[in-house]
Amino acid sequence: MSPVAKRRGRGHTGRAVAVAVVGVVVALGTAFLVANLASRGDVQVRLGDDRFDAGRVENLARIIDEDGQPILFPDPANFSRSIYVDHQGGDPTTGWIALSAFVPDQPECTLTFDPEVDRFTIDDAQPASCDRDTTFPRSGAGLRVYATEVIDGRLTIDLQDPANAPD
Image (cartoon, rainbow, N blue to C red; front, side, top):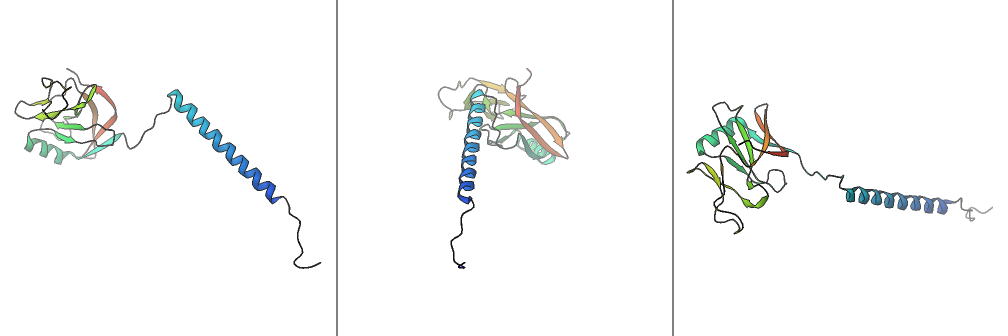
């Protein structure tokens, strides 16, 4: 027998084809399953963290006290929603509130805080569809509020489930 004699195949081609076919079937099945679940509305895509670390409470309270107005955080978690953070009282570990910076049900109407009247207002730079007479008190009554918590001296805001502020 010659050292360069041709060997008979042992079914490698057949195995490779079988593996490829199984891979295609699994990929198509997965795509079908994902499409089916997405069409039912049962799937929620969540990008980013639901909790926003606003910073050290001592620093935030000092800034709010010195400026005389809440701090605006533009879109803190890529949820297309800016928030205002405010503090009331002398204890930096309590008295925090986080508010939506938009008129409820009108995300195109961004609010501005006016320290002269101590209210959230709609300025002239907003679209014409925004009612310039609409205002909200600094307490946040009528706006969406987000739960706040002080953890190890840092203010954490839960951006997941806004609720309406009490009147």
